[in-house]
Every structure is written in structure tokens, then in C-alpha cells.
Amino acid sequence: MIDFEEELKKFHPSLEVEDAEDAIYDQDVTDAADVLVRMLKETKQEE
Image: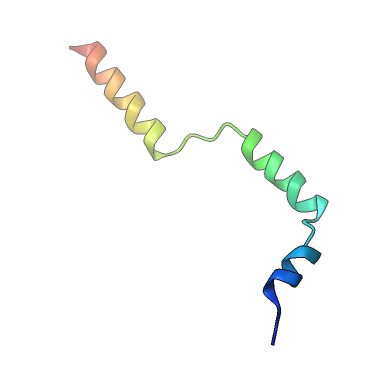
């Protein structure tokens, strides 16, 4: 049987994953929610 607790103790994330995570979170990407909020603000300003 696999001892999951023992295997988790051996786990160390690679630096490449951490570097990729930083690059992803540092990007300013507009998502659907941002577009919707912007559209609502523009609609309210036109009224």
C-alpha cells in the first residue's frame, strides 16, 4: 500500500512551478467579470 502521508512529506514543489505562478499572477488580464463591470459603469455614466 502507498503511505500518502509519507509521500507528502517527500514532496517539494519545483522552482519552475513557483516561477510560472508568479508570472501568471503578475499579469493584468481582463476577464469576463471585468468587462461586465466596465460596461455597467459606462451605461450608468450615459444616463
